[in-house]
Image (cartoon, rainbow, N blue to C red; front, side):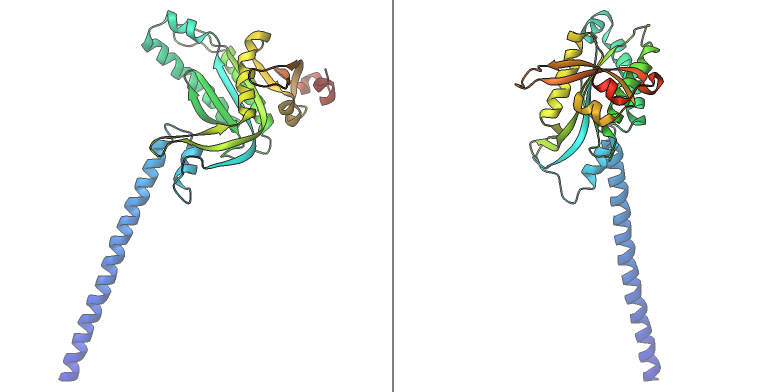
Length: 268
């Protein structure tokens, strides 16, 4: 009888221990599930304010991103800005202006996504778009030019609001960029920095001077290969730099249609 009673006690203790282990495992699994759902929701919410790739980069980092955390990468950058947007804003109501701007951003974002670009930053009606930063793209220079040309093509046939047209000036450059976080511990901006970024921004502004809508550096045009029809503007000085920059303007017709070798275009 003592042996039988001892066996039953051992059985009860074993069942209790197994039940405790299972209960602990279920509690932990529930916590992990809640955390996973919370993280997914955070990424989803964050991706509404920044590019999904940037949101994923931030949330999956091995450690919390700090101000100054950065990496140097060879990439391309595209600045684009709506021509005479201030004049348009004067002629429409704030509500209509916001609707037009959202329509425009939706159309242009489709072009950017199609060619692998990342909208790194909005600046009013202007956009800073990067290639080969958080999303790998060996042909980033060509992707940047395709995006700039694609924007011109799609806007040529679109009307916004009560029949308004938008023309967009683009500046494109390629080189070593610094990708990282800048700001304070309370608030940071994840973006790109460097001289190559500044050159792209200045080229976007210089379109007004040369009557063009796409200006790209020689480095970008050569790296993009012979796919594009580009015409040399010449060596131009951009604000903030002592050395001139050789710039090209690119049309929206593929170079292949002209049956010209790349050298003929680049040295024109």
